[in-house]
Structure formats: C-alpha cells, structure tokens
Image (cartoon, rainbow, N blue to C red; front, side, top):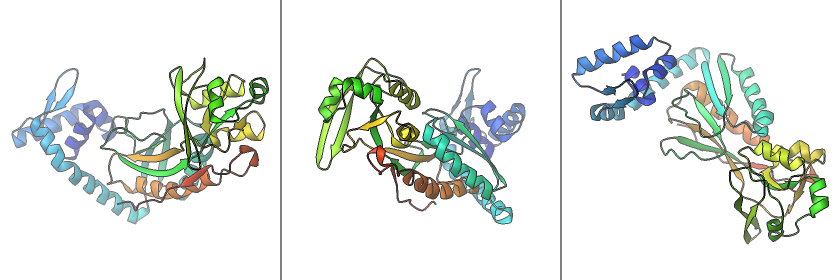
Length: 313
C-alpha cells in the first residue's frame, strides 16, 4: 500500500525508488504483484509516462491518509524513543533575508536536534514538493495548487528605494504620482506594472515602468544601487544598503502591500522532524523578522509582523 502511494503521488517509478532507497526493478515487481493480488490494473505504464487508472485513482484517494497516519505514528514512536530524527529537506527562495535570517533559525534548530539532518535548497518558485521530495518549502507567494497546506508565518514590509546618485540627478518623488516620471526597475518580466500605495485611508494605484526588468529581487536591488532607477524591495533585503547609504528610501509614509512568508507542505499529517521544525521556526522566524528593524534611516520601523499560528494537527 505504501509503495503504491509513493509511486502514484510521484507518477514515476524512478523518483519513488530514489525516495524509498530501493531498486526500480524491485519496486516495479512489488507493484505488479500487488495488482495481480487485487486483480485490477492500478497504473498504466508506457515508456514515456505513468498514469493512474480509474481504479488506481479511487484506491489512492482511500489509502493515502492511512499511509500518512501510519508513517506519522511510526515517526512519533521514534521521536518518543530518541527525539525527532531523519533527513529534513527544505526548499527556500534565494533571497537575501533567507541567507541572513532563515540560516540563523536553521542553525539554532540544528543545534537542538542532533538526530535531524537538515538540507536546504535555494530555489525560485514554483517548487515541486512531491517530485523533488521536499518535506516543506518556505515561500513568499501563495502556491496555486489547492492541495498544498499553507501556513502564514509573517508579513515582511516593502518599500521603494533608489541610490543617492540617482535621486540627486532625478529628484526624490514627493507624491506617489511622481513615480510615473521615474525609471523603475521591475523585479518581474514586463515594461510596466501597477503599484498600489496606501497611507492611512488613502489608496493610490500608479503605473510605473522603465528600461530594465529582471526576475530577481537581488538583481533589481543591484541595478538600483548602480543608479539605474527606483525599485521596490523587502526592507530587510536592503538593510545593509540603507545603513551604508548605498540606497535611500523614498515615500516612507506610503506603504506597499507587505510580502507574506509561508511554510508549505503536502499534507497536514507531518512526520515529527517536519512538525518540530515548523513549530520552532514559526516562532523564531517571525520574531527574527520583527526584530530586524531599528535603523531610523529606513524611514519606518515596521519590518515584519508575526502572524498568529493555528495549532498544528
């Protein structure tokens, strides 16, 4: 049953065999014997793909939770005996705040749990949690897949920034509408974008654009430091640039929508190693991000705020 669920979820014998640590031939033979025992074909195999039959889909829906609960029960017994253990694989975005702040949280967690080996992959979204065998992902965009379990950890403040040289040449915007006259570096593909800025009860939607765009917040920040224009960024990502005056914040009284930080898993039935990390990191990461402020030159001390956490199942 467990072997079938692994293959069915990954839709790949090779990926399932790698995750299970067994030869592909042995796994394929076990599934074939299982199908012979029940007298129904559960998987359609071709040289290019693997698909569930209608019987396979129905069976997977019924037994997935049983397999998850059995694995969780086993993990809980092992955790009682010697504490959480195993290989914990985490995906996280390659952003500066991850390198600076999440790394510290993981270091603290690892020191407290000597039997858990933590592996971190820095990968841009979207992440294939099942196909790449991740236990959880840290995300700043809510996944589109409705089957994933999403927990919000914190919200990170965003601002608009430019280099002193650019602002000396072009002048600092005094109102949101002034942004339409500036070169704006977009951290996304396109020549223009709509930004919504808020102050108190006011809300202004502005169309901004410029000659440069990219798919990386870090690269957009580098373009801004080089004097190529204004850009929006997580305030904690430009912390060092602000303290060394490589960047200045503009329109500090106006707020852009904050960036949520999520933990994403494929199931609510998590092994002890993943539950212990989420419990620890939810508290610590929110606190670390909230305490990342303190420099008045940022123009705002509201870097991040923790989000009240629902109890894990």
